[in-house]
Amino acid sequence: MNIGSKIKEYRNEQGLTQKDLATKADISRSYLGDVEKNRYNASVETLQKIASALGIPVTKLLTTEEQLEIAKGSLSQINDTVSQYYLSKTGQVFSEDLQLDAATNLLMNKIKKLSEKNRKIVEVLVNQLEND
Image (cartoon, rainbow, N blue to C red):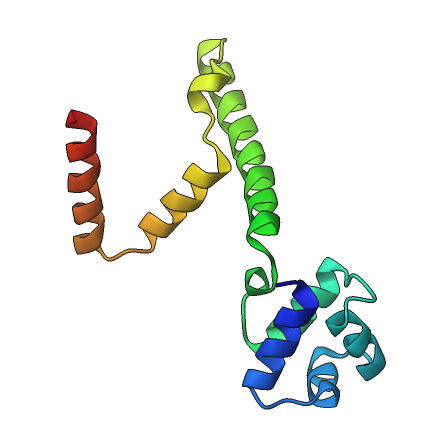
């Protein structure tokens, strides 16, 4: 499902007209209609306004692939920071040992959101898998 369809779906779920949402997001109704029909690609700023007006995180409007691209970019920045830190402390860095792929990063973020009890369950399962 594309961004325009997702915006329309969330808007309809909330019983909002295009005019209502456009007013809340401080954009024109005609522009919102064009975004919903995928005639225009909204800027990140506009997507943030729309998501905020809908009361949802902007990531709900993105495809999995788009979310992975964002995660990869964030992960790259984290890896660079960690590499620079280790370089400053040891004079050398083994970046392949520090890098995580985007899927692992997303999984770690999901695990962080679990309750402590459920994190322990995941830890036990991972330990069992390591021993197999």
